[in-house]
Length: 317
View 1: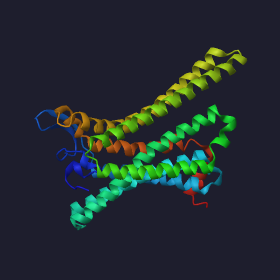
View 2: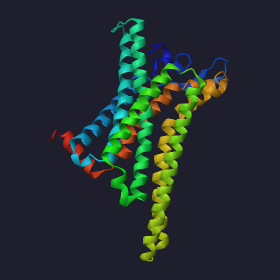
View 3: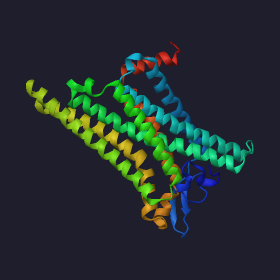
View 4: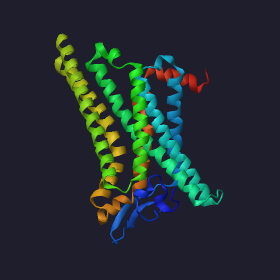
């Protein structure tokens, strides 16, 4: 938990930029070129983290409360919320410790801070990796429910879902530990970038295929009612907009961080890349924003979940 300037964020060892100023403006890089830098204040980090923490905690509590939601699909959604909760919680913890250290309200030895930093980094990295995995798992689950509807309950069983969840968590912890230990190795960074691209391609292929099938199905129904073009075009447009929003948010929130990792490999000393490195904290903030958006996309659209959420909020246990 390095506590100077913009390097105090988790995974800050990836960012070799000087202290950021608390405003949007042009900052000079090491070569004197002018760069657009967006500085994220501690207050904003805390606010985003707390909102995400509360929101995802509500999702986990809601699914845990309602036995009707104890299905494989909601198991993956609950684990996604738990991953996002850990991302937010580790951010809140780190930012709070940093503020206490800067205010002089907390005194700790460097060795203790280093151990705490390593623990928080592993939690953050593992929860980020698991979050990506559960986004992919949700896409696969939805794909099977559509294209193998009659066999869905025999293919996607709760024990299999639990084993998949356990495998994802174990793999995430192991690989995040390796990432923290060998963050300065090119192979590790490339593996992370390839993993992100694989998840992006997987989600894009599955959701596009589902959209194409849904449009074809709507077209078949329209033919039966002799209303082919209006229904098909309207349904296709709505599906395309939904798909664009889903994949667009995923790419917008996660893409900059993995672009950062890619540029570390390709051009660590180039002035233009240096300008991008200056916005490392912004990229982390976007991931936290994704943790806020995920429940809106994957959880709160369910009527059953919303009804149970009201009971949780009113303490009707």
